Image (cartoon, rainbow, N blue to C red; front, side):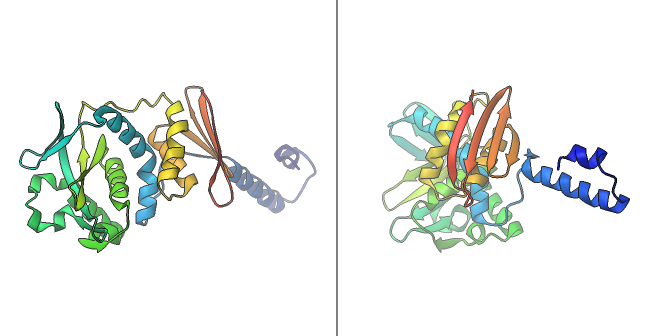
Length: 257
């Protein structure tokens, strides 16, 4: 029975009508929910899913800019250079290839990292303390292969930097964040980039597809409609549509652009 029939059809008691209408509106809300804000995160995985999409796209821009150029780090000046390109950096932490253990920059007292390069690292620690996320508060712990890229994506998203870089020094890699006008910004009007970037994100990292896609569209300032297992992102008459199965895995991704 449609909502109009309930409003103008057979008379019912006042109490019954209110209950029926409430259920009808609840059903409509479940079918079509609009959102523009991210939900609160409570663990490391959710934090990653909130930032992976846009950060991955930023990383593609940075990789296109630097290509295969040799790099050099100067911690005294706080810079990372690729040929004639030079960028200011902050140090997040490092991953050892020997045992895949992660050490935060703020915990690595023997490295001699200047304090002025540890602002982002220390802020992530404070976030971890507030949210009780152990990966952000334990100074040194065994992680897994690829953890350095997860941290880079998270840091890039939280601090709105332009990219991260994993500086491989042989026995391990140091994760740096980069913020520079020399790196092109994402054009939120180019929705076609989402169609090519999002599948690459999913192939690179183990994520909740649905949550990651929703947060990606929020970061790109799209109006979002959630209709059961379908998410639509709309901007200036253009539309992206992703459908997911009952396990939140991506089934299809299309665009009207």
